[in-house]
Image (cartoon, rainbow, N blue to C red; front, top):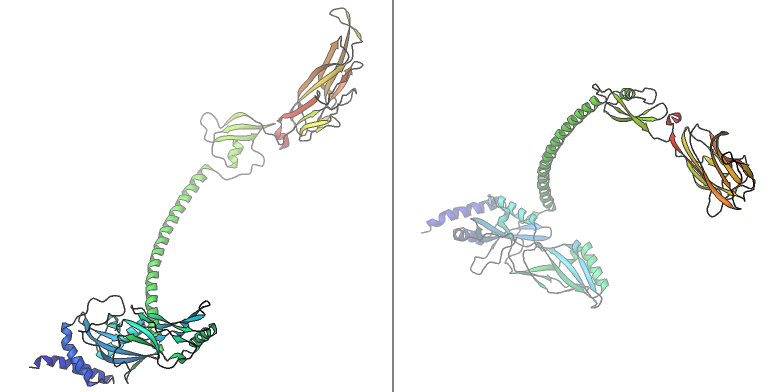
Length: 514
């Protein structure tokens, strides 16, 4: 009648034997309960687990968890429970919350209006280190693999902060009850009356948390027999470091994989760039070859080019228009460096190039009556190149070239008083005159003459002197009156400015300046 239990008792015997080998002694009630659990486990299944690290509280019709073993985590006792349920044919184990004070995370706030402070305490409920350590411990104890997802925090609904001893008068508990939703840590509050009390309690908790071991967390629902077993397994600080090291190892491995992947992509990009650079180098070499084919070695011919032949010896190979040095001026030529029957060079014309501008425009401001003396000028409207000296009235050519000059004068006459004989009429009549000449280095080059008959006093007559001259650098040009009737004058009016002299360079013999 009990034959169907024989395999179950065999499993229980092996299980207990393994625990004896590990020097973990279990009460006989636990062994029997575990055996009955094995019989019931084939009919009990858990739903698909969620990502929440806790399980919802078991209903009243499910078997209660039984204590299995204990672990020491710092000052906290971690009890391990058999949930008496399975998930995907795997036993689910519970472990009690750590309920460990994070003393360095203590902060306080003080309300000046209410004259009351609030100290916020942080408690760790669970962490991955404990879950993994519990799974490893069970794997060794049961001699079979227990995965971390088989280990859950003992399910509870709410939690509150209590004190197992009389606390100091510096703070008071608030008796707040928090609903638990699977958080790794929770914050609880205590009150203090003064700012100094709050600051002092906070400092004590941070510097000496052992003074506050009387503060404990209560959980609902509570579980029985939550005292640590005699042969508890301690989770040392080294275990935590080992876990952190393993996590770091995983992170480094992942980083190494990502780095290797990125390195492969980078090397591929570098290879592509290398190919593009090789193609660019080939293109530059081809372009250089074409350029070299159209140019030749630069040769210093020792002088300015005067022909297409000089330009070709200097390295030009592209046909086109060029300026070359002529006998007096720059000349424009077309050079065909690949000539047929038309020849290499065709003369186009002269290039109007001036090394510097030269032009002036000056005026008289008063009448002038002196004969055989350069006419001075008082006003300078324009004198670019400073070649015109107003005081002396003499223009000095700065460079060799062709210059143009023009003088407009105004003769003032008295009433006619001279009797002269004219050959055409054979009659005597009265007339007056005034003559102005243009001189170059003392040589007469142009003249302006005005002669009037039967004049009245104060009569004015305009006249003009114009000339285009080829001058050498340093040649001097001026105007002077070399003949006039008595009473005649080069008349000027300060308002109208009748007398003015202008000149400018038309063409510069640029070769003389090179």
